Structures are given as C-alpha cells and as structure tokens.
Length: 326
Image 1: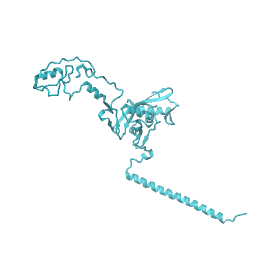
Image 2: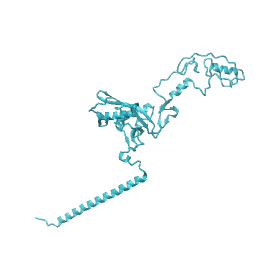
Image 3: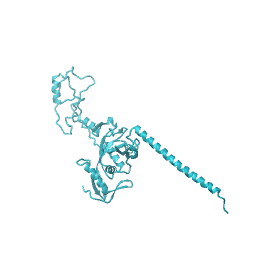
Image 4: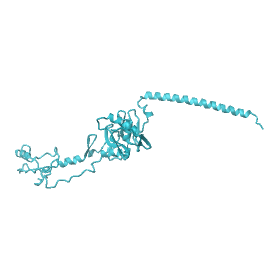
C-alpha cells in the first residue's frame, strides 16, 4: 500500500477530524499487526473521499436473549414433486439429479402377515407406504434389497432434509433450529462484519443483525469500546466504528468492540476505571485519605474567610469612630 503523506482531513465523528497522514500511520501499524491475516484493511480514494474497508471484529456482550428469524425471507421455495413421481427419492436425488425408477417386484402377502386394520396399501405410484414384513421372511429380505425400503425413523427423504436446512442457520459456527430461535450468544465470543470507514454506528449495527437474521431492533443495542482496565466508551450514532478501531490500535488484548444492550451498560470513564480492579480494603483506604484531604481543605478555607471577616469588621469600626467632616 502507498502510505504517502497527505494533508486533508478525514471525519472520525461529529465535528471531529483526523489528518489523513496520521490516519495512514495508524493504518500502517494496524496492518503490520495483522500481517498475513484477513483482518488487514485496505484504503482507496473515491471522489476525493478517503475510504478504509475491511473486517471488524465484534464481541458478543449480551445479557438478554435475542430473537432469530425462523426462515430466511429471501430464500427460494422449491415446489413439491409431482404426484406421478416417486416420493421416496427414486426420481429425485438429494442433489436434484434425475434417477431411473426401479421396478417394484410383486410381493405375495398372506392373510397372516397382512397389516393391521386401518392401514391401507398405497397405489402403484407411491412407494412410501410399502411396509416390510417380518425380519425373518426370506422373500422380504430380497424385496428390501431390490426396492430399497428404508425406515422412516432413521433416514429422511430429500424434501425433509431441504426443509430442515431452510430452518437452520449458524452463529459463530453453531447451528440453531427455528424451534430454538431465542437464545443468548456466549459472552465474549467474536464475530466480524465487513464494513468501511463511512459507515456510522447504526449502520454497522443493522448490518450485524441482518447477517445473523436477528429480529430485534438495532435501537436496542449499542457498540462499546471496552478496555482491559475496565473503561467502557459508548460509540455515538455519529461515530465511525472502523475509524474508532484503527485509532484504538489493533491489539484486542488492550481493547475490544462489544455489542451490548443500550439500557444495561453504563459508561466507565478512565478516571473511574483505574480504581476498578483494586480490592475493597484498598478502596476504603482511598476514601479515607480523600476524606482527610477534604477536611484539611475545608479548615483552610474557614481560616481564610475568618481572617477576611475580621479585617472587614475592623475597618468598619475605624470608619465609625472617625468624626464626619463638613
């Protein structure tokens, strides 16, 4: 990449700008850290606008379950096979290939081996209803080998498999069925989205929710930059998450971008974060020292204003004792 010196400014938030030269230096450090990985970022010029694009790692930090779509609205629905085709998969394979129909041999069934009442034998155009006889019948073993009758409990038809695939999708490599469409992602697990430096925080949130077919509104969530020190900085709606990540540096052991509930997390400033990891006795000693310092400052102010008050009173008395001149 050409990291030539530039003098123009790049927006990094509302009324906030950074020089292109400084941003390129941060970008160079970022790409050196991720050298040889797909997290490297690229930049380009488009209509005199400097644009950085690439993958942004986002960690899940949700405390409440999220709702997932039961089915992808954009997925094409395949029509069911015609009634004249073999529904057991003789004409339609698992990959949609056409197979040669097999000839079903005639099976002699005696009255002793007849199925119980209520079960009807299927027509010659439907092989799903073909029921095997007892396992120790020699003729049945040949019939099962010729026709390929399968147990329904263990093997699904191609149409069933396609229907199950429609109702499954993956989040971080885990597949979920539509019956379990409400769940909470593991805290701290990482995902990523491909964005650019012109996308604001709400746009990145919507892109992430659409990627995993999450039905919750993007207004319920926010992006936070969380430091190992405990500092939590909420990205504003006018901020650009990719620029913020570049300026924070590439090392995720120092800071990470988290997706969290907007109403469940409070920002923690740097001044407060530096005290978070201390033990309770140490914090109590800090409070005691601060209280003592406050008492000293109060006493100092009281002495100061006491002296001023005495000086004013003394001056007033001197004025009162002086005779008025005509």
